[in-house]
Image (cartoon, rainbow, N blue to C red):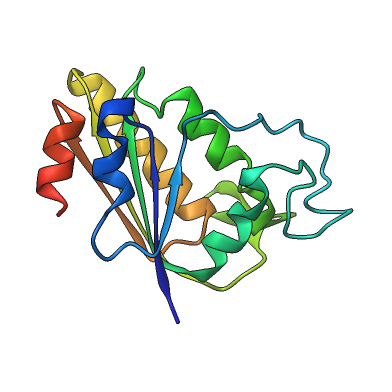
Length: 167
């Protein structure tokens, strides 16, 4: 059965709002921060498809493999994700294989799983047109690398707005 995964980084006062998301089967808060990927390649060699760092993030590759939708909620920082969300995504790399493929002249990882989920990213915070453009390009590249069937990027002033808009 396909599941929906929500990865989110919001202020502590809003955690409860996102912890009770309707229709989301798997919830993963980026707070407290997870350990950063150390680039050891263990998720590819020692324990294929599973991070060797033994903490709550070691299950992330299996979460991605089960999902029909991945929703990310993050503050926008210089056209990208928060450091906490970036760490969560980095720790999910075991979802992919260490080999590469070319798509439209760009190098991307080969797929470990054929699971074309939809990637929906909701950024919040003040940003200009240039930052929005960078964020859209980043999410599109992430979607290609993750083998997503498609992606969407939406922008909000506050995380509260996301909570209301995505209920």
